[in-house]
Length: 326
Ligand code: CP
Image 1 (tube, rainbow, N blue to C red):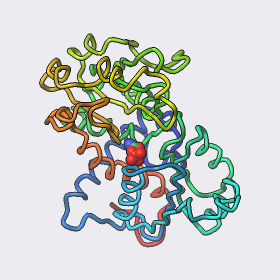
Image 2 (tube, helix red, strand yellow; image 1 turned 180 degrees about the vertical axis):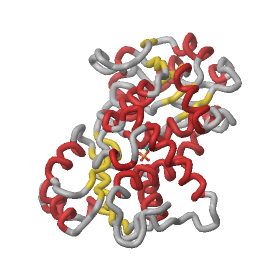
Image 3 (tube, rainbow, N blue to C red; image 1 turned 90 degrees about the horizontal axis):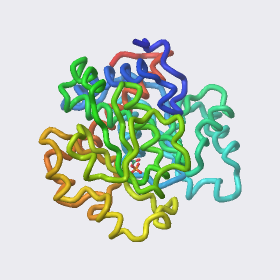
Image 4 (cartoon, rainbow, N blue to C red; image 1 turned 60 degrees about the horizontal axis):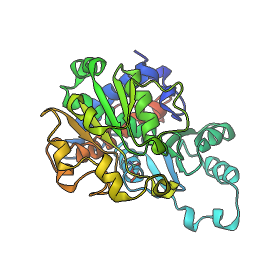
């Protein structure tokens, strides 16, 4: 297993981690889940460090989760507000991030509507680490990591939970075409040996899935549900034009929505996941989202601990004066 010393300087995609890096994140997350249960869920691990969140796209979960994670590690957090920044005066992205780095920021957590922006930013800056919080259709690595952690936890945790991935049947349903979450999930589940089936109408699949490490593609959700161990749903990405790829929301729900009838086809132990934000009544029926099998709130809770682990592993490599201990 990779040690902390070998952890990458940036987290731009799941491929930066590989199976050993993923296992390391999940292992370290266990410690931070325990911290989260303490009366004072804060540790001095990143005291003296500063992280900045630069979100050029809307977010509820990811921004708050990263900022909570950084604060629980005692880092200082700078929340960059694009709408009131000099970006509105025409400043380029390069000048913006170089300005922020010049202030002595240790990590830049960036979300951007253009695929590849975090990689571009990582090439411009000198010292800061860059963490991809979602870029266009490309990747959302920490979302996939928190999904894996939630599955591992439900399967018994620790080594036992890790071993179960090798025999896991994962079904990802929805707007695969526009989904950065799906791309990170496929890479992450495949790295741990799970078999992934993509379920979507042909129009919501990527133009090419050559090279994707998947077991199958299906257009028939009813056929895939009975054997699934994990059903991971995706929202239609209307901000990326997905509405033009389905005749109507009603037809999409009829053919691909996880309705109450379809949830009854699942094995009792099947896990239902959704990265959020979910649109109740479209990709998931409201009553299904509230079933005990739905781990959607658990995903959000685990997201804080997973992001604490990522920040700790990236920034804890050369500790600031004072502390590096959990
Ligand atoms: N899952 C996710 O990325 O949610 P937000 O868009 O709210 O950050």
